[in-house]
Image: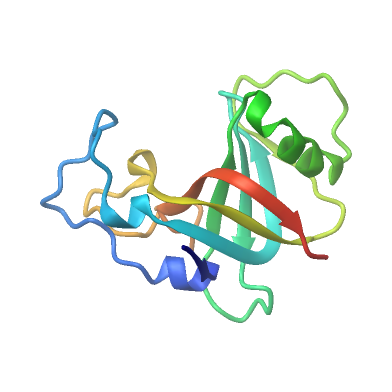
Length: 154
């Protein structure tokens, strides 16, 4: 079953708490990370990371609720169609190299639905393991990763 959520709802989720050890080698995922979510909202930002992954930032469509959630589209053949759609929204010239994160300028803010599993991105977690990134402001540590399906609504 796929649960519909909004960025502000994910932003309101609890973090893991300071007593949970965060490592990149954890094989057992938390219950929230084993569920599928459909996140429908407005794109406000996109960037390509140094590893080639594309991060799309989403906020509630009405813009009145606090909370931004990243949806990560990995590098690789499985995600080519989704990546081409996102890159098609930009004026980016190709090919381009990325040594550090590279912001993509989006011409028009689309409303999309991304489907994937939730992921607590420990690399962005603060010391108290809450759900609030230090930077950028108002971003959740929880994200949709990887995006397995994307539908453009508007």
